[in-house]
Image 1: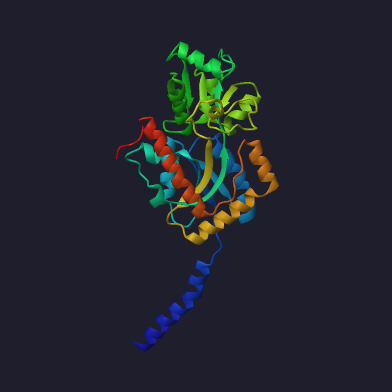
Image 2 (image 1 turned 90 degrees about the vertical axis):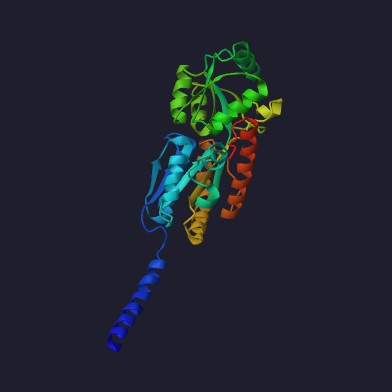
Length: 326
């Protein structure tokens, strides 16, 4: 019996260094999946591919960008919630699945505070009011007059019900008294194709996907959502600055992980991503993508930011009559 106990104890003792080595294994230890809630070509997808290349260089592990579009981001978020808590599956998302969905869907399958851990706010981006070039409206006053003259004749696109592009237009309609028919799409590129062709006539959209089309003359910018003008569209006034109040101040992009991921891994992710965002070439690339830099945040600061944003969008959805009642 003693012999058996000794052997067992020896086996355990021999196993301790192996356990310690496993615990101390560097992160990441295998390829990392970066899940995007929307179709290729949108801001979160563009940003993920730019950042993924730099993370690969730092980690010496591939970063695989996976698009999981659908249900205004809930499909992608659920992948993160159900993933292992080892930090090898991350979410790079725009704001709507994180701060708008909780205010819209009574049966939402995830709880942001319970199921997710904030890692880092990556950037913000303006949202522009875009129109088909053939629309007979050269500025915001002419657009409002056109929409008022024939209520319901014109259609606007969005990247889905409850998206920033959808709610920006709804707040614009409320502020100006105009009417237009909502046509939701599964991605910005699909909506932009129809805006170019004239199938829809106007749309609020994040500049990462729409600015190249503006520069190419395929669509036209009329204004910028919110109160702050942007150097990316110097001829487009900010709606709040010309008396049209209530439209949101653009969108943002951030990285989150499953709540099961340890704080040590969250801290490393935050540190590595902040390092990348300080690099001059990445700053230049973000500018090229029409994304605005932000002050570095800790995971806790990003969490506080998210909670404030949830409160802001609660007020917006409630004022539009879209706020969930339970």
